[in-house]
Amino acid sequence: MRPTQLDHVAYWVAGRDAIADFVTANLGMHVIDRTDAFTLVGADARRGKLTLFAAEGPRERGALEHVALRVADLDEALAALPDGLAVDRPREDEAYFDLGEGVRLGLVRAATEVDYDLDHVALRSTSPEETAGEYGSLGFEPAEPGPSACPRVAAGGAWIEFHPGDPGEPDRPLLNHVAVLVESADEHIAAAKDLGVEIDDIVDAPNTYAVFLKGPEQVRIEYVEHKPTFSLT
Image (cartoon, rainbow, N blue to C red):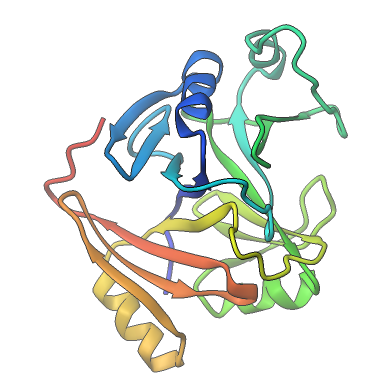
């Protein structure tokens, strides 16, 4: 198993249109795809994205602490946010804000080829160090802690961080899944069977082919392959 990129983070939300409107108006994204089931948004279809699945509310944050986006000029990105939005600045190069329904986004100042690409996903864990080690067995690369000092793993230049906290077992979780790009979904299906990792689902879609695994603390991880016919922009 070897993810090449953090591809997207998928939420269950009741108000997907309001969230999509915010990120397209203020965070340099556009609607890449919209179906009856979900809205896919991002700055570039081949970089990190957010998927907003329609679901009944209210949702529970459960394992998801926040999702952070990478920008070259943080001051410029903050100036583009609406007046009156409450913004937390825990560190000089980071800013976080809430969009409702438990969706918390962040902006991180860092070198990037595409502004508003995914920088990291922060997950709650009852045992962050141990959980980071378990992600290593699922193909994620070991990484030194970042500015938050929390344990983390790498996926193609982005990270998954593990913050102390109880993810619980919510009936209506906010987090649908975390997805990483791979060269071959079939190879990851075979690897999961060899490792005894539970396969939650296999999805053959028009642009992608993917396997969903049950990761540590019930977080679903999608290993997604872009087909040669991948045409989203």
